Image (tube, rainbow, N blue to C red; front, side):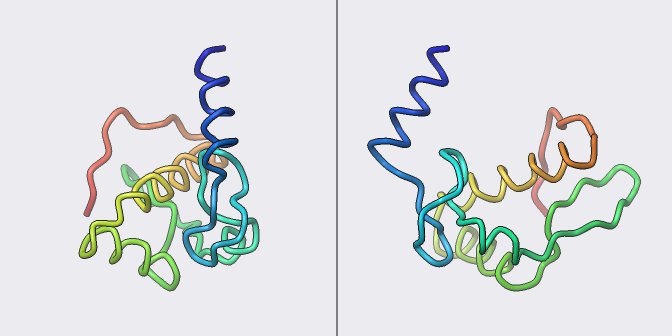
Amino acid sequence: MLRKASRLLGATVFPPRCCLCEFEGTWPDLDLCAFCQADLPWDCAREPGCITALRFEPPADQLIRELKYHGITAHARVLGGLLAIAVRERGDVLPSLLVSV
């Protein structure tokens, strides 16, 4: 209950903004608008032992490069949220460890 209240308060004080187009974000934990989220290059391929959310194509590659080379750490939260969405939609279990490649 306390966690939900703090997330709601944080989203009220600092409303989410799309990290790609600056429109309003879709929900408190994801700084993407519905349009940019729908346009992402979702990776539907399933490799054994490997979980991916996006193909390395625009605009996903932009988010990764800005995180890696420019230190925009807010993109890490967005990319992690997208990975969680992909895992849940596939019916998989969230991993206990993530390794970036």
